[in-house]
Length: 304
Image (cartoon, rainbow, N blue to C red):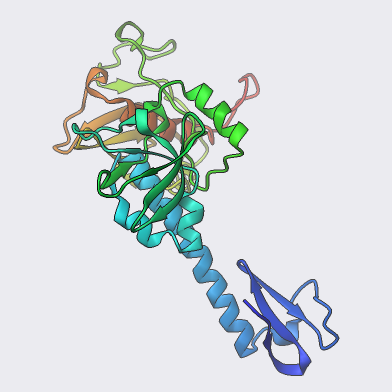
């Protein structure tokens, strides 16, 4: 955006989401002078900057939803939003894969997204390092696979580093948790009598006030409902949710976290064996992030 003349010989411009100002001599100032705070052009640019920041955040959140819920994304939609810098920043270099016949990600044809065109389709760098095109006549939808679904994730991360990949949305370097084998379903330190439908690896995290736990959960993007931090999920076409107990007493009162559980759309608690890899990883990720804000006692090794 070019410079816009304003009062007193000053000129203002927008650099990304920052308002710049220069004086009549053409020198760019460190900040906008206070006397220009209510200037019409300055106010307009600041409002535009706020909108751009909100738009960028909403683009990243939408891409994160596609990833976490394993939602198929039409190639035509990617091509339509690609010219928008905010969308392009959120999408560029994500690993995308054509949707296979069974609705899963065809990871053998996956690659890093570099371009989206309504006629030529998606331009990707495949996992062999070659630049290829996914023909829109052949590939109508793609998935943005959750990293827990990607084979040889460690090697793929190394390859991404070699390519200089910088992802605007968290995918490859997102922390993943894998469901233990059945014999390990009761973690060390779990309370006696823990049911087969919950996971207590993040139980007994103390918060001085309940509102500290709920505020942390909300700030991380999770809902809080009925004493639980909740993460809506979709896996294998089935809607479900992960729910982590944070307490439902007085907001100013102390609370201890409880178990993590998974439920289907009808509210039925699922045994671990019925929880898919993405749902398990995202549920445990939520619990770990909330639990990390607990009060750490002196004799404890430290927060996660």
